[in-house]
Length: 230
Ligand SMILES: [Fe+2]
Image (cartoon, rainbow, N blue to C red; front, side, top):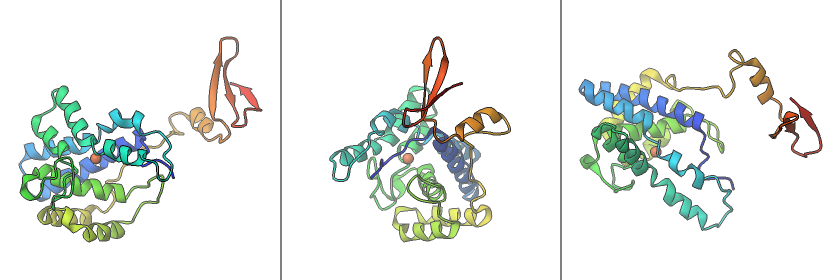
């Protein structure tokens, strides 16, 4: 068994942009005021920033049956509050922080951190919830390939009690228009911008580099037997 959370900054940023674009579109579909649309778009971009504070706890390899799985789940469930607190400390708009704090609440009360239900959940948080789930399902994960637009929608309909129906219907109209075209792919290495680094990243046997004052960096094979200077 791998990790419950594989934190990858590039993927997190791409996910934030994807959620933000979808959420803005849903807010427009619902004819929300421009200022609220802006808040929702900002919240979409930054909703998972609290995971940065958890990243160091979440890197350990977890074995099946380990009590750490339960511990780790507990940490993961802290991230909406951490995201909201972090942004509040840096002067982020109160409304944006409130949306982020509640972006994992479910309409039927089964979410977290406070188990809010129905209209006690901020409208922006209900929008982010729907867009977040769709963006995650239509993106590749280390443990599975992405679902198609149709498969993702079917899976979400199975869990419809988690979502505000009015928000979900607006979201469905948006997806009908944009599909998965708002998805963001940030390449790990850009061959056009930096061909030398891109080629270096493709060399599968290089695992780590050591630095010696006299030799510069030395790249090592996984076996440690072969080495070469760069
Ligand atoms: Fe989240």
